[in-house]
Every structure is written in structure tokens, then in C-alpha cells.
Length: 321
Image: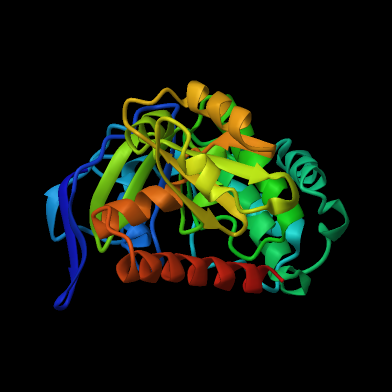
């Protein structure tokens, strides 16, 4: 994608995004609801067309020219409700150019793998939303596509099925497939992706590997849980190399001076106070997103952004339950 822009009336949904996704990678599009993730994916899929800019997919000018090499799970779930599950999947496989010979056994094998073997002869409308979503995932990978695009694939799934789907996505990646998926639940991206695209208000605000992101946004902080959860802030603050200490949810969050070695700081803290647990704080994608959006400030703006992210996550959990 080169300088891709999309508007809906006066609303700018995507603002000049540049993007290059290498073959065989697994990329996560992350950001809050309404950030522009789905619009970007729909342009990649040629469901929508950009107002300006250029894009290519699998070496072609549009996804239409490579449609049988792409597997797509849209944000809006949809199956043919009156069709039986196995028949629906066979039909989807044929639409993607699969030979009918051996297709039914392959469909049944996939249904067994996702623990839906017993529903093969049920109508799609008889399945729960979570089951329908798993069926649609099969439809998106049944034809063994080179590129798999999943828009909010975990939405509506309970924790057990989230783990199952995560394992299946990793399996596809290990097999050499290119995987793009979007989510507003950033912990999901952290557990799967090797590269992150962060989108906010239609703009790409971050594009990097997960490792490099963690290095760039290292908070230089240590979490300390004291024995009996006693407040030891005064003693910890007196330890050499400590910039400040605050308590968050019963844990001492210890900020280090820029020149202080983390391992040495941990040893100094252990020598100074009774500790039940101590660990280096690793930045989460949520922390990184908030720092980028707020410009590193704290206070009201910081908490407002976090609250919006949490609200979106709660909506997903409520759908799943």
C-alpha cells in the first residue's frame, strides 16, 4: 500500500497509509474500535477501493486477480443459514476452485480438528455464533491459501476456543502462509504476531517487529511485590539508581535512572527489602499505544485512552459470554 487514503463523506477513515507485508510473515493490525483497521482490510480485499494511493496483493493490482489464493474471515459473520454445515464448507471449497474429489473427507477432518465433527449434518442456523465463526474459519483456510486475512477473528469466542484458534493461526504461519489479522484486544496480537501495525484515527502510528517495539518503548521499570504486601516505598526509593517508586494495585512500580543496570538494580532491591516477587516490567502493546497517542503524558488523557481500550475489550468478552 502506498499513500492509500479512504473517505466516507466528510469522514477520513484511512489517511495515507504506507504498508509492505513480506511473504510468510504474521502481521497484526491493532488499534481501538473505529481506528480504520477494517476499512484497510476491505481495501486490501477489493471490497472497498481507495480514493487515492496504490496497492497490490500477491503481485497483482487487486485481490480480485488473486482471489483463490486468499482466505478471508470478515468482521461481519455470515453463513448460509439453511445449508448443512458440511455441505456449506464443500460449497465454499468449490467456489475457491477445489476439486470435488476428496473434498468431503477434508471438510470432515477440519470439523473434527475444531471439535465440531458432530454438527456436520446440522443446519448452520442451528449453531451458536462461536460455532459459526469456527466454521467460517475453516472456509477461509480450507483451500490452503497463500494469504490469510482475519478481521477480529477472536470476537465472540470463549477463552478455550480463543486458544484453539490461536493455535490454528500459528499452525498456518508455521506452514509458510502469510497471515494478517486485526484486533482491538492487544494482548491477542502480543501472543501471536511477529510484526505489529498500530492504527489510530485512520493513521499508521507504528510499524515494527514486536521485539523492536519492546526495545524502543522499554519503560525501564521493575515490579516488586513485597512480603505481606507491605509498603516499602521509602526503603526502595533510597536504593541507588532508583528514580521513583509508586504503588499500583498493591505492586511497587520502580522506575530506574537511565544509567542504572536492571540486573544490578534488582539485586540492590533484594538486599534492601523483603521481597516475594521481583521482575523486569516488559512494555505491553496497550502501554505503547497509550504512550504514542498521549505523547507520553500521564493523567487524564492517559486514563481516558486506557478506559476506551478496556471498554472495547469488555464488549468482546460480553459477546463471548
